[in-house]
Image 1 (spheres, rainbow, N blue to C red):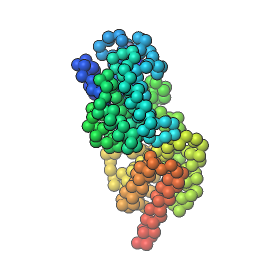
Image 2: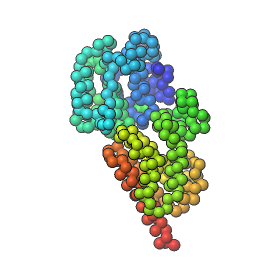
Image 3: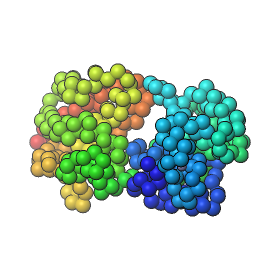
Length: 349
Ligand SMILES: [Zn+2]
């Protein structure tokens, strides 16, 4: 692995190649962009390039002792920090520990690099502690903050860092990786690449979770539902997604995010069918005719309401510990909008 294997982030790559050549590395960077597009991988490759002993101009050598030790996470001047298992946020103690580490001079090189994953997930105390470190970093320190949401990072922290934006990967790139590195057939790779919105992590997760079958299952169900059978439907959803079986809350959360996303795309597609938008690709393309037929029993306003319900649930997902209840509530509210609408239509006729 080296810069040569970073795919789909050409701008970022050339930015850093120039920066390194001109010896203008800053003390702190924020790598921002959606999940699963290679921010972490790039951060690690950047560290490798900075530490590499070979003197190669453009890239790390991948064969010197330091390059090899970085690959096996066994190099004393490179640190990683991320939320502890089953915790949503990085804690103050972790930041304090990091400060202590940073103030000890590097052992084997001119720099000490810290990569903080999920740096947008910090409480206020931790964030203040990080700010102090960013205000007076030791000369040898380079701090890389990896975030999915820039809005969750305080302005004062942002003002101390150079912000580097990573773009979503194109469908073509994701498809290429899925066929070449995961040996998927062309058709499946293309579908997964399309539904993963440019995130390789999502694409591979969907691949493992039989996402396409689940997607079709959900479409069939959502087209059928016509009564207020919210609890039965919720139970079926729990079963189909094995939601009860997850021990680790964080894994469950990611999994449920995909589920919500499927709901969101279903009603988005229905809205597109309703308004006759011809320029949009449908996520549920195979179901187009059924969606068009079904969309006749919805008003645009109802569909916007449902989309709002799903978006709100998605927001709560990051904070709400009771995932089952969140799903149940979302389904109840959606079906409630549908059934109110039916009464409304019947009342008119
Ligand atoms: Zn090397």
